[in-house]
Amino acid sequence: MQSSSTTQTNSKSAAPLEVHDLTVAYTKRPVLYGIDLKVPKGSIVGVVGPNGAGKSTLIKAIMGLLPVSSGWIKVFGKPFKKAVTRIGYVPQRESVDWDFPVNALDVVLMGRYGRLGPFKRPSKADKEIAMSCLEKVKMTSYATRQISNLSGGQQQRVFLARALAQESDLYLMDEPFVGVDATTEAAIIEILRELQAQGKTLIVVHHDLTTAPEYFDRILLLNMRVVAYGKTADVFTFENLQNAYGGRLSILSEVALSRARKKFDGDTRDNVG
Image (cartoon, rainbow, N blue to C red; front, side):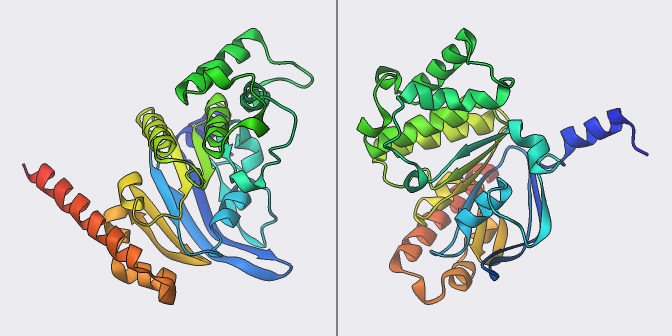
């Protein structure tokens, strides 16, 4: 029998996310088949694949929002419910009720609730943390603005601030770049890299093949099954993209591959030099 100290050590050394033989089905129709995945600490993983590939389903399954038909998911070596305080989540914008009567600061404070006891209200310190998170996404001047009165990019910044307020070790983000302008996209990726530098692990659903090689150091190429997973330089190949997208592979994929080759070639030269 393991001692409690051994269990704690194993939990600390365990991978931020490990998925084994995961199958998820809607109305008995499988959407994800036999997913195997192990994410090392400090990675930014891009989850990439065609529409209907199961990218958002994977995130929701990890979060415990969908029933699992078979397989298992462990977060830092534990079931999700036992590690929930170590996880930050940014949902898809389209899944949020933006007419709910709350302001930006209220939304960010929701990220503190997992650290509060039952029936406890946010403290002054919690509010200071929330304001600090709004400052990181350059939204302090909108703290009292109703969330429904913000632009799409501003709403996304607020939800990113909410995730930051959770002070998590693993962040799950479902298409955080959709519907935002170039300035907001640049601000988001800067924050993701800051989190990575702090040793945090990030898993990001992403749809833009042209920016994927630049944004992520690892890529999960998904189409109901794992087509390829690993370091971006190894996964982001025409053959793998063809296997994932098939006839839906567009000229943008060629642009993405060209950018990826330049990036990888440049990294190689830098390493040699």
